Length: 311
Ligand SMILES: *[C@@H]1O[C@H](CO)[C@@H](O)[C@H](O)[C@H]1NC(C)=O
Ligand SMILES: *[C@@H]1O[C@H](CO)[C@@H](O)[C@H](O)[C@H]1NC(C)=O
Ligand SMILES: *[C@@H]1O[C@H](CO)[C@@H](O)[C@H](O)[C@H]1NC(C)=O
Image (cartoon, helix red, strand yellow):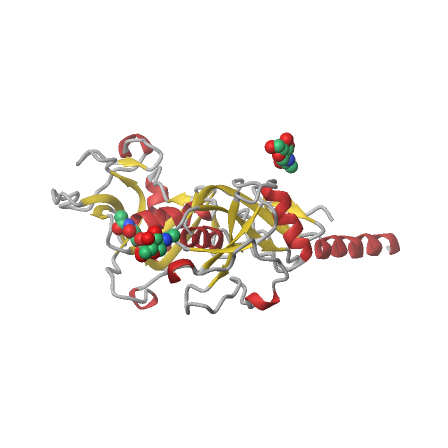
C-alpha cells in the first residue's frame, strides 16, 4: 500500500514537471521553452500569424537564455543574416513591445552598427542578426523567424494530440474536429487549420457528413458573431482552377474521396464560386473563396507527433 502511494505521488510529480508540445518544436531546458525555426522568410505579420496559430508566439530575446537559444537555433554568425523577432511597433509607431507585452527597454541586447535608424520613417519591426544584434526594419520585408512557446506543465496535450482544447475526437471517424466561428476567407482558413496541425475538413463518408452536420448544429446562428452567412462553412475542397471539377485539398475527386452530395441547385455556374463549403444540412456548396465564412478543421490525433520536454 505504501509503495503504491509512493508510485502515485511519483506519477503526479512526473506529470507536474514534464510538459509536452508538438515535435516540430525543440525543447530547450535552459530556456525552459519550445522553439521552432521557420526558414522560409515571411513578412512580420504573416510570421506573427503563423506562430500564434500554432499556439506559440514570434520569439523575442527577452532573457539571456532565450537569446542564446535563438542564436543556437538560427545557427549563423554572420551579421548579414537576420531573423524577425516578436518586437514590433505596429500598433503605434515608436512604441515597441514584444508579442507578450514586454517593452523594448527591458530587452538587454545591443543594436547593430548604425541601428536603429527608422529609415524613411518606415521601420516598425525588429530583427536579430547572426551576431546577436538588433536592427529596425520595415515589417513588410521578408525574414526567417522563430516561433516560441514557454513551457507550461499545466497545459495538457489532449487525445487529439494538441494543446488546443477546441479539437474534439469523434469515435465514429477517429478524427478530431474544430469549428472556427471567426470568419476567414478560404486561404486564411486553410492557413489556420494547417498551423493547428490539421487541414480543412475532408468528408470521406456519409457518416463523416453527419459528424460535421452535428458539429455545425452546436454553433447556432447567435453563436456566430459578425456580418457573414451563418448557414454555411468552408471545408476542404475547391476546383483547382478547373470549373465544375471539384477535388479535395488533397487532390482527390469528391466522388473518390467518398462524399459528393451537393445541395439542390449547387454547384452554381457563377465563375467566382470555386471553393468548397458545407450547409448546416450537411450538403455541399461552392463558395466565393475571398468572402469570409466560418470553417471546419480536421486533425489526425497522431499528427503532428507530440514530444515530451526532457528536463
Ligand atoms: C550549424 O551549421 C553548421 C554549418 O552550416 C552545420 O555543420 C551544423 O550541423 C549546424 N548545427 C546545427 C545544430 O544545426
Ligand atoms: C528612402 O527614401 C528615399 C527618398 O524618398 C529613397 O530614395 C530611398 O530609396 C528610400 N530608402 C529606402 C530604404 O526605402
Ligand atoms: C484573405 O484574407 C487575408 C487577410 O484578411 C487577405 O490578406 C488576403 O488577401 C485574402 N485572400 C483572398 C484570396 O481573398
